[in-house]
Image (cartoon, rainbow, N blue to C red; front, side, top):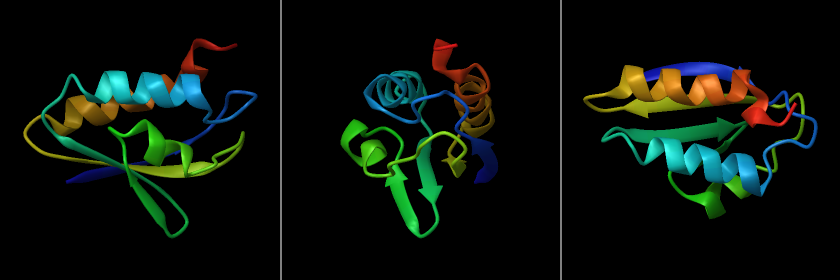
Length: 88
């Protein structure tokens, strides 16, 4: 299991489109993906659960990958955050 802290940098936060992109990307991997905000931890392969984070711009999230391709998964999800989900 590996973890990394990322920051939501796109202007409108983690809304439907970024959540969809996370789920779409994560589904390419065998490893499990979890995202944590404060005391809330959700399945990174579930749009509904991701939306429950209500993560606005500037929110710091912990992304957690666990499985045979965890490093690749974590790098791929981190890149989405760094690229602001292609929104800016």
